[in-house]
Length: 270
Image (cartoon, rainbow, N blue to C red; front, side, top):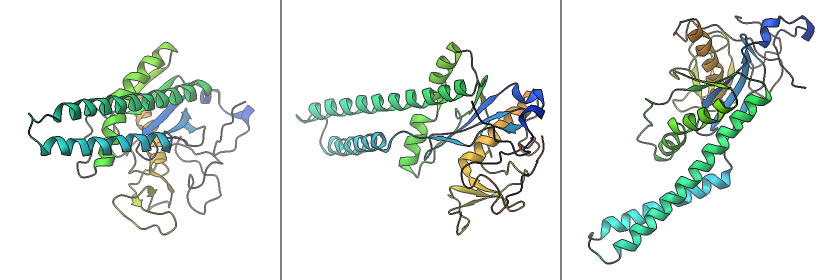
């Protein structure tokens, strides 16, 4: 039997019936966590954050292949095109790229299967993802750019779309702009912090902190909640994240999923 963590602590038998319609799996696509998902329904968050990433061993294999490819490419650039050893090096380069593509496809299948299995287990009718078709990876960070461009663009959506259609689940894309920047608890634009202990503000922080209500959480988790908020407003023809309805939170879950030091359940929006 599945559990639903609701912030208002209302007994199960007293919850409104509309709470159990239009269940959604809202998913943020990231780098450290390839997918971060939450189950939401009728303005409520029903699950703890669900983080998924490929194994470190698989990622290490891909990085090792890219290092090997870079070394071969430097050798190809060092010698003239008609040099006798260039042919073998090009063949080896093609072999390495084919191997990278196989690993990449394996990760895409694992990620799509994870999302689909989660949606089916929670009986979700819709999966909502970020629309990354116009996203430009940062050019100054090669490792980050590689992961974003390889795994978070159209390939995952296309593969998941095919699989979801076979089991009757709808797939929706929403604009990801500012989804990790606004507080889903009070709607105020927050700050990026490096560490939840020191709370040092930085442009590349992994955590989110709201200066208004002191809400503190992983930025991928914040983005997943806001993706659901954007989806809700799109259904009513509103497109502003700042005006989107807030989501009541669960009572229990992983650390940093509630305002720091706040143990009192709090209804927000709805």
